[in-house]
Image (cartoon, rainbow, N blue to C red; front, side):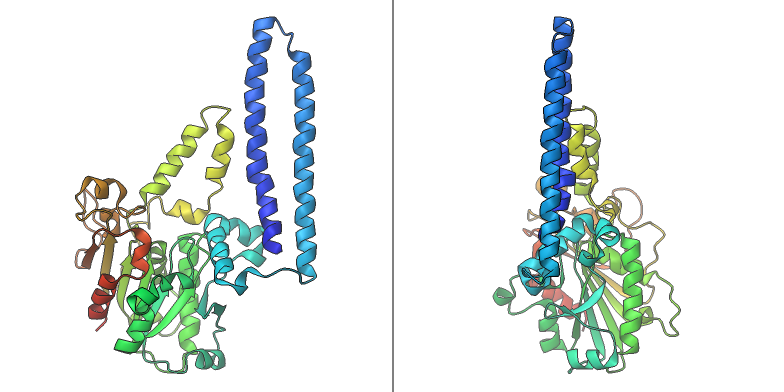
Length: 381
């Protein structure tokens, strides 16, 4: 029920407000032309129209506000299913956090996802008892998975039946790694999530059931940027977890920025030119700071771990990354040069990294792809 209340509130702010402002802009232009052509004879109809419009939109807004209050009251009485109880609800919550997670953290923290370790759709408290119970077969080698924008820990199970498991389950069965799945509010800034992740890993390792020998980090899309940001965080821990990191794997990560966010940014500017289209700009500008961060990727001065090996995976829709379709669209969201950190001019970001190109593949297929797993198993051997 709380989700319906939240949806009602933002529907009033975005959809109703946008329709109202577009209507007002068109009406103002139309009546302005009519008044100019008739010497002002349309002023009375314009006043009547404006009064009726204000009454209509005020009424719609009041109705939505009342509905939101009703949904919240129902939730307080325990009516309706919570989003966290099902995979579909968790997906909706993750997408919502990706789009407006920064606003949720300030205005509706009950819907803001905290950075956490996850197991079977639930948070795992980071104390010795809960970690021991959650990971009864904990090993010394940990592989940490962090999803991308609008995704969650369930996202790594994409086509797991078809591929014989997820990356984590297969690495556990075949190579003795303990998979750790994280969930984050991807609407927050990459820097904020990097600090949260560094703190979480410090706390988790302090209570881990065994001594840890190796840590491998695997990030999909934005998750790869957050992992890199976390590796650059200086913490107060006596033995930083970063000293244990031997491998960093990024899957379709926009190291040089994502063209889609740049396109949206240009689109928002274009929409703002005319009064009739300017209200639609509100919807585009509502996107979270996490999405905005994807425009350029991380700052150039974010340092890599000198002792860790980096492995970069890039997908393209066509068979070659030089194909015109791949040049323009990449994997739909990230172009090949960005995924491998190779700008057209200037030095490569990861000159000694392993690079895997997965042709004929779209962005989300990298969450569980047989070619990626084969390479990952070799890299982490």
